[in-house]
Length: 236
Image 1 (tube, rainbow, N blue to C red):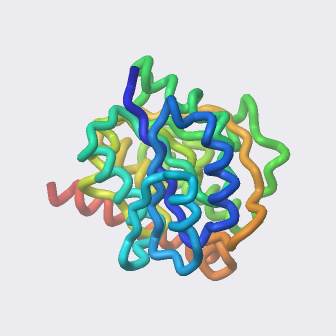
Image 2 (image 1 turned 90 degrees about the vertical axis):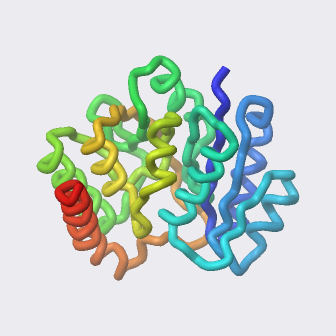
Image 3 (image 1 turned 90 degrees about the horizontal axis):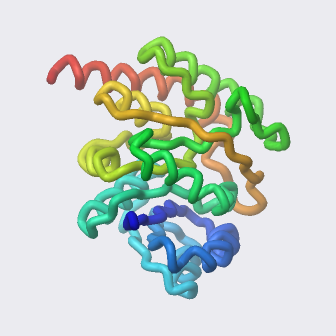
């Protein structure tokens, strides 16, 4: 049996987090859970503790990348074999956890991405905001041009990683909207990626990180992030 950790980054997600942790109660015998509270100003930490879930509370807001990397560091220190990222906003249904882990347990992939947009089984019910969809298409095309690998859902935060992959990320991980840049890092380092089709839910409470200005700036951030990865590779 693999030792699996569910990493839940959360920033001001008291309402969504409570519903998610209630759903995860039935999985507590199979998987460990950690909530990384990214310096929330609401009751995110208190909600997690009320469900008897350990919390790593950050003293300052590091952004989604910093919060997830904190979870990776915790997983390394505590000897986990596999981690699964699940956003604290409630959009990720826990029913997909086992399917995300299976390709790793069979040695088929080092990182498995839950995708809403696979050609064989797209999530037609999910409504992606227009600006975010444009940014995602941009990062998908850019990643394909850079690596020759087509990932249909580069912005998905629902992912599983084996020990080698999350140990690598525990040392080096992008901070700001890290999803696409992290995939580039994995592919350029020789890790194997796999997408599986999933269905996601729309956010019911709280505020998305992809508001108007971040959505407009996102493609430029991805481009700069990709250039930084290539520069690091060149220096090495």
